Image: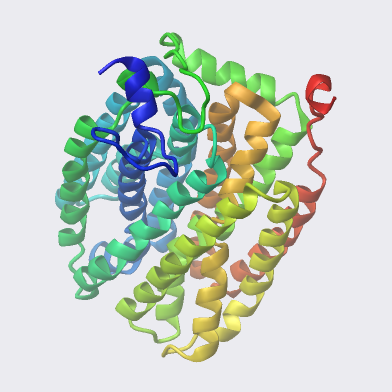
Length: 436
């Protein structure tokens, strides 16, 4: 089959499919593998919130110490992302992602034998943090930018929703494992799950449409594969220094830091122990967190669809404002059992969990063009720095005040500030030729 025939055959259209002419573009298969990979990364990151009480009971470590390991994990998840995006330009997506999965399997598996707090910091903080960071949402942005020229908002929403799906699939199962105080089977499960994804990455994932003689989905002509870009670390830093001279970068980084603080750092890490403080069983609390994941899938995909149609700045402002209001009410809803107002919070908050990602990616693309994936990697780094700070400060606040209430209220106020910051991001002027 010639290059032209393959490109034509793989394009999705409304015409009848002829012999040997698949109706589904290869880009959707690549997006599916990316979905499974990001799903796994999200599941691997969801476990530490379940381990706080079991590790505290078994080893006597303070919640602040355990929170420090979670903090390192969350920080590296973000700080690794821009370098991983640059490494994908140098060595290819498949090699980077497969290596990251093996690193996660190693880090999680070694925790089975740990006996000291520094080993938790090394295994779950450093190794798993580096691995999951290499499969962060900057990976989703790289796949979207290379394989799609249309439906980018929708695809970004679908890949972002994989984070919630990972929670949905793994959290209830791991909560049942951890409920008896034996956390080790859950750590082994994460290790084996990471290894199970490696064959799919190596066999099905492709670095660029040109590797299979196709044009990107929605493109009108064939796009040659660019040459490998040497100096991945230097390029990541250069892009950061260039973007840091612009106002929109700091506004995007600031809003996304608050996003991380109010989701991964606070709710994902501390919701289960906070609910348990009010008498709710751990499996029930973990199931509520998983339900958040169900509605996050809906909300994030819908956000991607809306991002293709409405102004991203205004969408961000609405998302942050609604999230802040919901967090202010949460301390009044925690109780020993699940009741209708709590279910309403779970649904409402779930729809907003990472709905911020598609408009944030769209604004990065609008502002920074070809460097947008790496810029988004740095913006994601700020997301994880915010998450890391709240992960450790939330544990310290619980140790000092005996309650998480002050953290919920502070997070709600920060979300209000993020809504205002999103509104002042300036729009990038369109080129004169396009305007004409």
